[in-house]
Image (cartoon, rainbow, N blue to C red; front, top):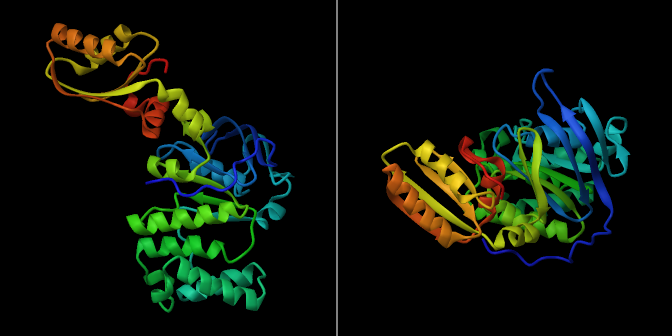
Length: 331
């Protein structure tokens, strides 16, 4: 995806609308779903939470939308204490969760019911309903019952109906699941358009392409911890001097080989291994290639695939979380 036209640059002095300090949460008192999470979100930005399933993204969304109260830590949303002002916070935000939440009426009826629940005036509600049906490609199915829709159609209704009311922050938990490529792009463009008008968005995804397209800043979360948090330009600049080597070997003992390779490459590189393949991040690709060839010969392995390329946001993610449980060096 090419980046859409951006709005005004986000000011470092912009108002902080979410402030989390050392948030921890456990569902069973044995394992932390959130483990010391701290960050801020500023008004008018798209803040991305990237992580694999079970990393803690949805738990964090539930905390910020006051659906759960964290076990410990401090959380303020729109200047309000999330532990004490849940109702006031919920009146000023929109939430699209992963689970379905529909009544038995039609698509247009869903939008109307949602507008009534939010107290939107009838004339405003009717106008916004028609705008949203057109913007989200729902006009042709407006008379169909929501329960009879496909998964992608239901997702579009879930996102569209949040825009029936005024809000200051929109929380999107995996909003593009089930959407085709075209509708996914249109949905992200619609969100970006609202951001240019002043909306703040917290967006969870495991799709790195979406995050690169939509987000101003991203936090990589794994095991309930934030491993990396920065804006996209800084991340790309941080990793810009390095190269990524994709490597697949055959024969021998790949796990031992990759462990030996990590030691040989030194602290300036990282090796993220999955089975017989690995992704290597290094600022000295020529030296790394020579080491790979020499070590593979010594270990009796065949080089089945070897490729050097520029880094992507996906590489940042993989090296942050240690994809596949492989070896990680300092990056």
